[in-house]
Image 1 (cartoon, rainbow, N blue to C red):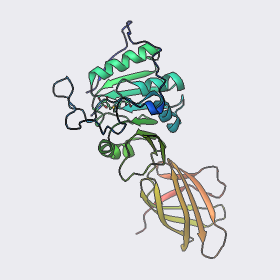
Image 2 (tube, protein in one colour):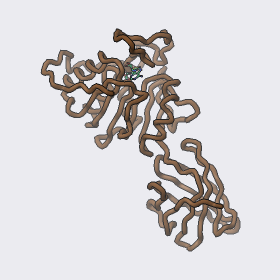
Image 3 (cartoon, rainbow, N blue to C red):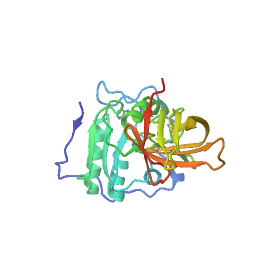
Length: 292
Ligand SMILES: C[S@@+](CC[C@H](N)C(=O)[O-])C[C@H]1O[C@@H](n2cnc3c(N)ncnc32)[C@H](O)[C@@H]1O
C-alpha cells in the first residue's frame, strides 16, 4: 500500500547547508496552531488526495527542541507521521545519528524529503514512504513526532497506545491529545510542545511475595499513565500510598494498617509479569490473578 521511493538519484539540487538559523520569534511561516489557514480543504495537486493537515513545516529551532524533549539518541528509531519535507527525520539523523522514517500522503513532500536527506548525506539512515499516516505501521518506533492537529492526534491515540511499545516517546508540536494528558509540556513564545510516554497496560489484580514473606496484592485501575487502586497484605486491607507508571516501570508504595513503615516496590512490566527492578523488597514477580 505504501510506495517506497529509493535513493538512487545522484542529482540532489537543494543546498546541503541550508539549515536555517531563526529565532523562535521569527516563526513566520504561519501561526504554529494553523489558525491563519483554511481547514476546509487541504487538497493537493494529486486527484483524490485530501490531506488531514496542511503542510506547514516546523521551524528548525523548534525541530531541535522537539528532539531534545524526546531525548532522541542514536539508539532510537524515529517516525515522523506527516513528515512534510523530512526536516525532523533528517535533523535526527544528522545531529543524533538516529535512524528515521517519514510518512506523508503528499508525493511532492516525499520527493522533497528524499532530496533533502540526500543533500544532507544521511539517505542511508532514513526512509520516506508515501501513505496515509492513519493506516501506516509505526509499531517499530521508539520515538514518534507529530505536527498534525488535535483531532488527528486523538484519532491516532488508540493506535499509539496499543501498537507502540511501552516507553516509546511521542512529541507533538502545537497540538495535544485530548484527555491523554502529556507527561511534559514545554511552552516558549507561541510554541507549545507536548511529550507523552506510552504506558504499559497494568490494570488488573496482581499478587507477589515480598522478601519479608508477606503476600502483597493490588487491584489497579488505569487511565493512560494514571494509576489508582487498592492494596492488601496477607489478605488484610492496606493503603496504596503511591502508584507511578512511567512507560514499562511501575512504582508502588504500600503501607499496612498496622506497621507504620510503607514499603516501596519498583517493577518492570514484562508481558504478563511485573518483575522486580533494582529493588530488593520483592521476592517473586507479580503475576496477574483473577479473583472469583
Ligand atoms: C503541519 S505539516 C508537518 C510537517 C513536518 N512533520 C514538520 O513538522 O515540519 C503536516 C504534514 O502532514 C501531511 N499529511 C496530512 N494528512 C496526512 C495523512 N493522512 N497521511 C500522511 N500525511 C499527511 C501533510 O502533507 C503535511 O506534510
